[in-house]
Every structure is written in structure tokens, then in C-alpha cells.
Length: 272
Image 1 (tube, rainbow, N blue to C red):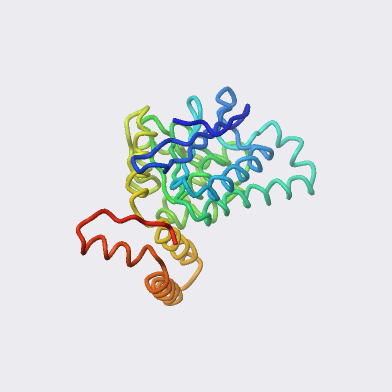
Image 2 (image 1 turned 135 degrees about the vertical axis):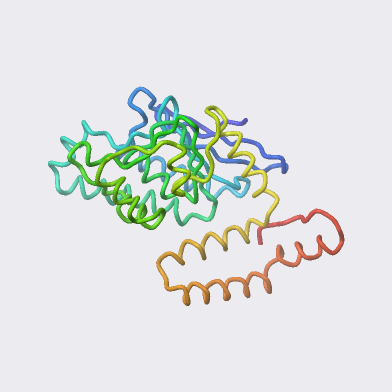
């Protein structure tokens, strides 16, 4: 484990992978006493961190988790008492929060949420912005805004009904109920449930697989899949065809994979 930097609210680590000079970029929200609230300043800070990791060619996967017993229990409710009295400030907060989640969703690296405990409101919105999530057995996941007279404003209303069955999404949103890890798995909100304390191990397992693949192919696939959610199936199929055509005919990595297969050796991808 090699630490890239830290401050009071966020820890950033690069965890070495099996492929030399390849890393998992791990972002840990580090305000355990407050259950890791995603306030305005932290949203802007995390976006800068994600941008740095996305630009780091040695980082193959970006993962998010929380310190203590929460992934993130959402926004800072006490701060909302002041923030929601200012039309300009609250609008700025919502713009920056959406900017963070949209960037995670569209950045070129796979992003994984490691849900280690309570994942509520802004925490759920962070999970939904990632490519997928793993949950610990003790995780509890939901929107929860309605429990405090609030409504989601950072993406839960847009993403949750597209992520799981709309009826289940509506029930979760309208009741404020938190799902168990197994319930979240059953409805497709997370991909795996692992024992408490094993989330980093699961993320490394995934990242070690990705590290052996073409970075350019992964980047292209994430872009096509992400853009496809906002396109018709026919338009997405056309984008897929055009992207594959350009990748296979112009990249180093595509013929390298075929040559390695033919020559019975491990490929040496260059991400170009």
C-alpha cells in the first residue's frame, strides 16, 4: 500500500496490483464521527481527487469507501438549515454535487463503491454514480431523504429507477426504508455481498482482473455503455459498432490481444 496523500476529510491510497506499476486508487471518506457526510466542500474535493486518479495512467480502477460504520450517511443535515435559506448557495451545492456524480459516471476508469456500512441519501447517490458496488454484510442502503422532510436532489430520483426495478425504487424512495445487504443484492443494487472487512480484498480481486485487460478497450466500453443509457437501442448499437471499428482498426491493443492469443503468450497492452 502506498499512500498518495491525505487530509482531515479524505484519504487517498494507491494499492499495488499484481501487474507491476498498476494500482487501485482508493478514496476513503474519513469523517467517521459524523458518518461521513457529503457536504459541499467535500463534494468539490472528491471531484478533484477523482480527476487526478482518472488522469493517472497507472491507476486502473477507482474505488470509494468510508471510515468507521458508514460508507456515507448522506448530506450534512445541520448545514442544510443555513444552506437551504440561500437560493444561490443551495443551487451551487446541487450543481457541484451533480458535477461530482456525473464525472464519476463518465470518467474513463471503472469506479466501484465499497459499501461498508450505512449508505444513505448522498451515499446512495455516490453508489449509483459508480459502475457498480460491493456491500459488506452489515451494510444498510437506501435513500432516506423523506425521513427528514427532504427529497433527493443529487441523482437518486433519476438513477435509482433506472438501476433497479422501478416499483422497488419507488418503495425505497417513498418510505425511506433501508435495505439490508442481501436485499440490495437481490434487487441488483450491488453486485456482491462480502464479509465485513473484506471489501478491499474484493475490490483488489476485480482490479487485478482489469489490470490485465486493455485500458483503451475498458475506456471505450465504459463510454459506450454510459452514453447508451441516454440513447435509443439503435443509436447505442451504432455507437458501439463505430467505436469497435475504430478501436480494432487503429489501436495497438486490439491486434496485440490477437497476436498474444495466436502466439500463446500474455498480451502486453499499452492503452493506445
